[in-house]
Length: 210
Length: 209
Image (cartoon, rainbow over all chains, first blue to last red):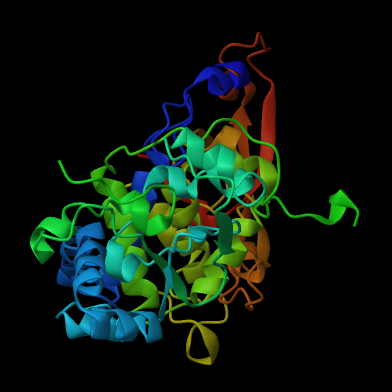
């Protein structure tokens, strides 16, 4: 039984095909929600609303902020000074988020991880991808970031310094990636489409225009 | 620093395999668990995020690695809410197992000092087929099995509540219950007369007709 689990492909986000009762935790989810509703602590709409809210959050909000910063030097400064305020400026609801934006340059490339759990700017970018929460990423990126980046298809020259940020407190990080060459003529919408989620975490770069 | 002091979740710098680009879509229950967490520590402010982290870390390295992300998540939410007295292990066990909630027993000074004993010697009972996290003194092997009350042993504080530093009030009737070994262990040859007697608290028992 143990060996079968070892052979199974890793799936750290929680839906591994295992021999144990697959229904145990889903049942626990249903029961906890039902008890809280029964006791009048939450309403059925509360959870639904939160599901919707989270479904509406994804990296494209971060991409919009990056594209604006590439176009507007004033916004870039405000973004670097206070990421959450800069998100609110674009009409995004980020709750109590405290966001530090790290700017990549030709000399410095930033990468974000939380080695102790899964801290991520959820209030802006939504639920983190499975690999961000995985043992492999959390263990290795602090020690061998260049190897992890190359597994994501990202090669950086040795002349570039990598700064890995272990985000373990009640503040969150996002990377402001380097603007790709040859994008001077693009408008903000076209620029935003070059910004990938991975580039906001630092395991990737912004895409080159077609 | 001696690695023996390192906790299982604290993995930065350890060796690990290739970083697979897991981008799978969450299952519906995982999205709901995610949202439930947000409601519980956000709007409802029932619990602090660091309490939930502590509960997941206390799983220890083996369970921490074995469970999926939202499995650990649900574990911490359920345990945290029990710790806070939002619901009891008994309530969660019944809700998880599709059993109706028992009539509310007012706790503390207002409530009865002890519950009435419902079963006399010779009563045919069944152990409820329920499961839940938490501290449960009803062994797995007898869950859902039929037995007979031998005697009422007395009234004891509920260990499921004592485990969370509460008083365990009202006192629970405790019975010695006899089970036929053949029923408990159908795959093991046994003398038909052999039986096992187990101490079981009343809230784990129901009368069989």
